[in-house]
Amino acid sequence: MLLGDVNSTHLKKWIQALAVDFHLALFSFNGPEEPAQLELAALDVTLYCPKNYAKTKKISYFLHYTRLKSAIESFKPDITHAHYASSYGFFGALLRKQPFVVSVWGSDVFEFPRKSYFHKQLLQFVFRRATHLMSTSNIMALEMKKYTNKEISITPFGVCASTFTPKDRHHDGEKFIVGTVKSLEYVYGIDTLIRAFKAFHAQYPNSACHIYGRGSKETEYIHLIQSLGLTDTVFLKGYIPNDVVPSVLSTFDAFCALSRSESFGVAVLEASSCAIPVIVNNIGGLTEVVDANQTGFIVNAKNEDEIVEKLLFLANESEKAKRMGLNGRSWVLAHFSWEKSVAIMRKHYETVLKSN
Image (cartoon, rainbow, N blue to C red; front, top):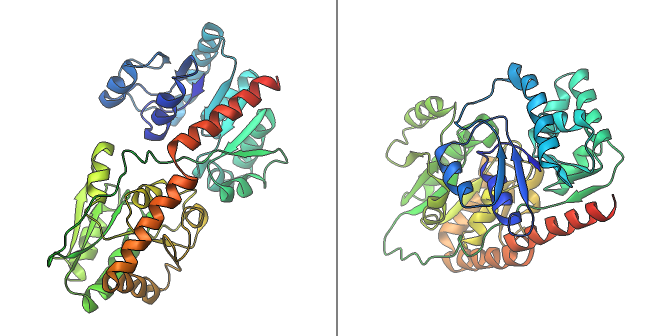
């Protein structure tokens, strides 16, 4: 039984892959939105969640304890796997159902335990109750080690290379497109990208910046674009559904991920799988998904000149940039394909079952 948000894109991918070999159930605080309803309806998955989408308020989390306990007693899982340590992991830990696997996702280990002594103790409680711990990146596993001495398995979240495929772009005078697909939140450094693009555009005018995503900083970023005089060159394109992302990536000449914090870098791998050269900040899990100077560049995002330098290289050295993109595709196939990730998770489940 998986414990996690039924509307999570990443969790839905795990469900779709693992349902082939395992009889799955999913417990979620929230009900499914329409896309999740359609995607899960075709799978043999038992759902324990409200029938309709309803975002759960934190204060009502505790009302779900008896519902989770009932679901566990009804389904009788061989493995209980919580995705996100500080919420679903906590309730899974309370039930003492073993084997109990916990996967951390990012903020639950990087931010949650730093809020207070109580939060730190709660995370350590979850880790103590877990029989197996998992992380999508080495950097996140190192952070987990601050709160546990247990072994941590790395289960990278790979990319479906048959979906994210390279597509030819014929420039013939077209603008050089710098792009990203990220929520418009401070942590993702969209403001850094906008400012760096202004300096790049001054030296390479035949260019534009396309930013896809929504978030709480949208109005602030609109004002930033206006104040920098970039309304004709930087475009906030809004939200796009996941099935549209591959076609959007194919319009980019360079993908930028200048996040201030990042536990992994799935979006970067998706761009690399599409043979787009990438530029990422030297922080967190982003450094694990780039083969430096081969599939893209790792930069200090606080150094605007460095970002501009790498963008100018990609714009002016088109053949080398193309080779970088193709290297990225090979890098993903070799290390981060979705098939490899699923095989790793299956193997871990088999190990969990044998050890209990």
